[in-house]
Length: 311
Image 1 (cartoon, rainbow, N blue to C red):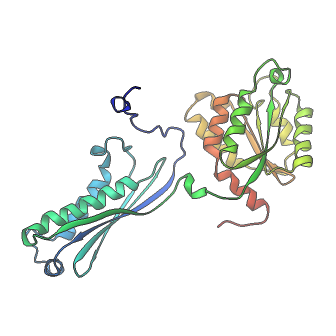
Image 2: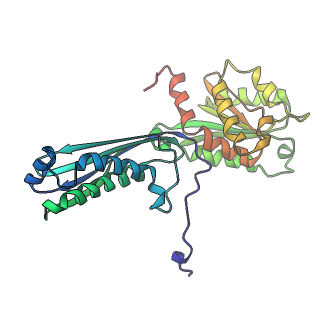
């Protein structure tokens, strides 16, 4: 067996992720003699004000974390708040970091708190031989897909629109991609079907799935291009009670950043009969992009359609 240590995995691939607001708070605690805390309060530390210096150092550490944490992604740090709490024999360095990006800022916050604490240590060690950094911990984090975790199951159907797949001439890889992707977010399969690129058959299949299974979600793949047989857009337009243009825009923007020809996509999303219906292009890559882009946020529509509001 090969030694995996010789082939480290490198930085994690986050190119498929969607940017969102990420916030992390970390805390480092420095213990010392009570007389040392009093010297800080009275601004009698021999090397200057340790609080002011540690605040600058912590801010710099948050912005430069990838320089000393090799696999940490360079990110746009958009806010750093450094606070200190002085107690009888301890000083807490509390750091909050914010970004709008694809990955979180837990490491940045912890690095900043650590460096803030280390500066306090350095500035106060001349007057206190008992000073020690006792702990560094993550206090909280928000942002990303983990915020959308829910125990509420939902049902879904997958419809593949393809002349060749409907004739058995081609394997339905795109339908498999949608099925596996939605199921990974807790979806329960209600049905799966394949229809040719015929508007009447597309409409009939969507209506049939809603009448028979009443799924929360129907995902279609195929027929959203500009070819002579691409009629999924037109078929669904006539079915929708309301459109979801934000879903369409979000998916198209996400795809455009990765594939230049995504501007030609006529993906469409809407609601009919209380079911969310989304049609995406027929390639497996587009289906994978749809899962990465739309989930789990799209599941919020299911509770909204039942009359529930935003949290």
